[in-house]
Length: 112
Length: 114
Image 1 (cartoon, one colour):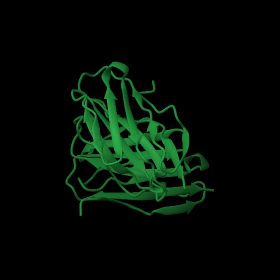
Image 2 (tube, one colour):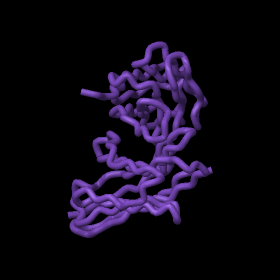
Image 3 (cartoon, chains in turn purple, cyan):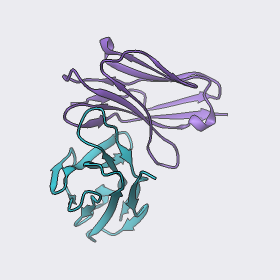
Image 4 (cartoon, chains in turn yellow, orange):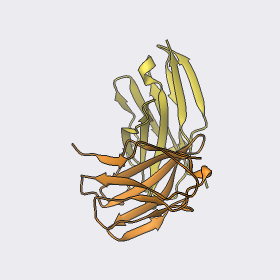
């Protein structure tokens, strides 16, 4: 069963637009963690954020923000005033007692 | 520098020729995994290891072998590679199996089997 769903396969925006990447997960665990990773064109996977299941506060880091809503099992990622350097594939992941499961990824292209 | 090192970065091989992708971490992590990345499918786990001499199958283990004889090393072995194993492979490690631990990933190995 799909544990992490990233429904948006590809998104294309123009620089300075805001963009939100969606992530929906399913789990029966009460304790779990959610992650976002970035994969730039160079191919490596870069950790962006970790959020535990008991902390529903939104997080902001510069132009990046994350909205965790347990009621809808979502952990969405927003980039404000996007830049060309934000072009990458973004993966959402769920870490539960069994292991970590990744979504299929969303490819974001930011055009100048 | 804390890191996961995998080699080679790029590999082109022929069907049936055995190959090994090496992976080493310097963080004393207990837990290591191999993933493959394919378009539209995200990252799928091939094998994982909870500690030395303890390995288990992930979601897509067919055609692969692993070993964990030392804590730092976790090689991925393809005994008889086939074209459907053409993919981008990542080795990853984390401190333990607890939910709070995220993975540190290697730089990836792009494998092409012709």
